[in-house]
Length: 164
Image (cartoon, rainbow, N blue to C red; front, side):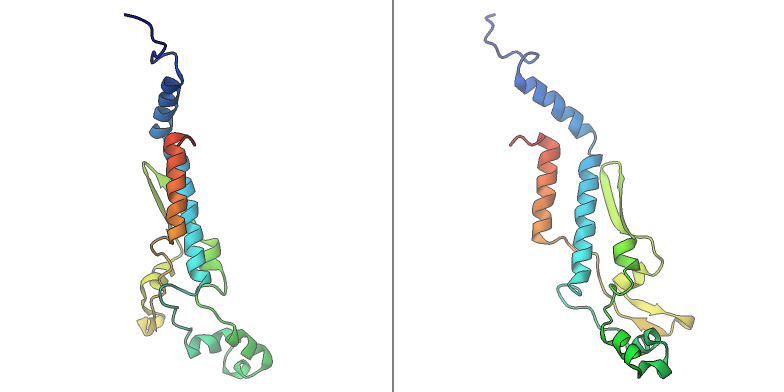
């Protein structure tokens, strides 16, 4: 058989296939990158005040409590605290500090482990005796179109190592 120079062991295709096999055996870097994209997507949703609909504003009782009670709600400082209130964004504890992504075996999950995160996402009754209704403020949503594009780029880079 004549040697045509295209042997699997001595050409660039074989090297690329070997590198691809190694990459495809471990998707953890790609999944971690996708997790970061999704965390940024969640943060963008919150910064927008919700999507497709805006989040319901904080209740008057919540605003008064944030101002320091009824006696302080009428003060200049109290009014300032009440006027700029933004659901899910004010303290930053839920969204900016508690979101994490965890990479598992061929999967990535993202979200928050803070106890009240679920009630913010889905809404429900809270407080003493479960007497306070908290409206749903869904912050984990389907990715934005540009996030899908970025996820596709990550997957192409992972699968093909930048070669397209």
